[in-house]
Length: 173
Image 1 (cartoon, rainbow, N blue to C red):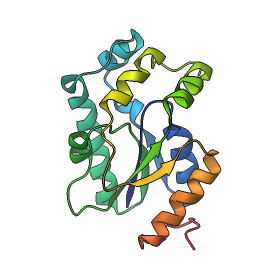
Image 2 (image 1 turned 180 degrees about the vertical axis):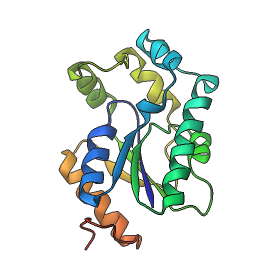
Image 3 (image 1 turned 135 degrees about the vertical axis):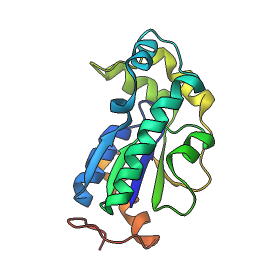
């Protein structure tokens, strides 16, 4: 199984993804490592990415997801995955991929981005993220205003309710 933690920048994807992977005893990868340098430069200048910019990034993520699925080993990824068509690139019908949407307010994101240090994402892009977001219809939706530990507990509970197999080292019950 692959779990993709999704949401706007500043929603807590990295923090929650790392905590969830730790609890599940599996690997973790942040989408930022899949961005080509041109994307990072563009976002650093405060310019939003367009679909042409996102295509190689999404394909690199898809390749990593396929590799994880092929091994049969669970893995957690974090990725904004803001539009349905992006999620369709990341996961094909019938695959054991679960999306978790971290739902958060604009005000909270602005506060979090203002506190974040050493990240290339320009906080001026926050509005474009909310404008682009198409809330998923088939994801676990979690209130990301909660503490990260509470968010992870909610995700674990939802995975258990969906009958997802226990991973080595996880605490699904």
